[in-house]
Image 1: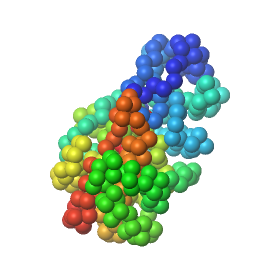
Image 2: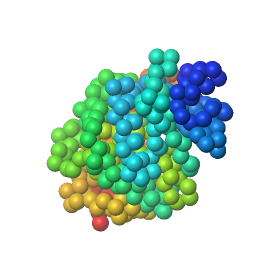
Image 3: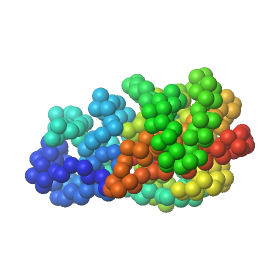
Length: 325
Ligand SMILES: Nc1ncnc2c1ncn2[C@@H]1O[C@H](COP(=O)(O)OP(=O)(O)OP(=O)(O)O)[C@@H](O)[C@H]1O
Ligand SMILES: N[C@@H](CCO)C(=O)O
């Protein structure tokens, strides 16, 4: 479930009245997503032809000081033609408003569906879209630091404690303990940086057939190592869903698609195994944190950290092989 706040029909109609989008026709809570409340909004549209939007209410995890960065980024990227939703500004020109003491934003609805298990052609298309995003972000001057870097993974793990982590799965503490020191020591600081999405999982990509129609959920976007974003996308897309079996043809297609727009330098390619191990650890850490913070009987389905620990071991075992030309 992902509607944490009840908004009455009057609240919604009043809110929509602040935008030049026509009158409210319907509002449906969206079940997907965990962090925020989302509604699919239909209005009569500016010209009476009907229009659809996503209304997001920012509930947790997001530091509201970061909201202008995320929304300005969407505006910048959509202006370059990247497949990301535009934000709708209210009549005063603001891209977010306050409702019940919480920030809300109205965002363009994009067509498409999220794919659970991509074909190589879809992975190619995702690679292209990701590289396009990196290039399109070049003229964007605002900055947000990554708050989930190696020292943050370590802090999350320390905070959770190995005893609690073992309660999730007995093998997890050793896997984490043996991986973190190298990641901290060897994390590269010489690679090109740009704005990165940092969470481009299948549920954050909308597709029509083999084509990417939307990249959404930019709430981890930040300025960091560009190739790390490809590593995040690789670990999220190139294994059997909910499992650990590597899909080499999807991996090849993702990297080929990426390089068709932005070829990796030799330094970036050499760093990919390390970056992929780091990307895996990032999701092990945050999934451990969420697992321990979410009661087993909560309505939200907890995401399993073990798959990502095994994926990290896969990158460790195979080394440069996965990313060789
Ligand atoms: N611009 C959009 N166009 C079409 N559908 C969208 C759009 N934005 C969000 N959605 C739909 O709403 C769902 C939830 O959105 P989103 O993933 O941003 O929620 P969230 O709670 O912020 O996410 P998460 O739990 O992944 O952090 C998506 O899975 C998608 O179905
Ligand atoms: N995409 C992440 C959740 C957001 O950090 C995961 O699947 O663990």
